[in-house]
Length: 203
Image 1 (cartoon, helix red, strand yellow):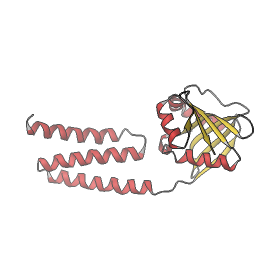
Image 2: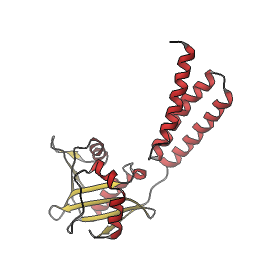
Image 3: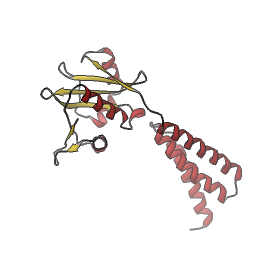
């Protein structure tokens, strides 16, 4: 392959990654992919001796690294508010996020009267909803453990399970066959019960 064609492809790749980063709903993913794209495009700019373009990419890389550092070192302050199954804001939240919820909880329809329902907030901003039914006094079966994309770094889930422990819950049981949800469950400390798709977390 000719060198000039290879350099052009590298330039296109860097540009493509920068564009793709703008489609990310997660701020962290946006910054990471944008940084990778900027590094590649910076190398391309240096190779073709376009030094102003390279300097601009270096500035973007520095800005992304600084912001990633801030994001990773900012402690999120969560709170959990227990709601009734017919709460108006709960209905609004579930409806507004229904298409995203279906990706991870395709069998979820609506909360019922006997469910334990918690709205998770981060600095008064709604971050997610946790809905489970009681399986005995100290156990919960998860029906919905959903967070919006901006808070999908497992921190809200870890907070919620600590909160449940303080409420006296001993065990949380979740069931899924969605790979992304399985990955999340492993990250927050669930153990899989064989190959059944059932996950258990002792609090």
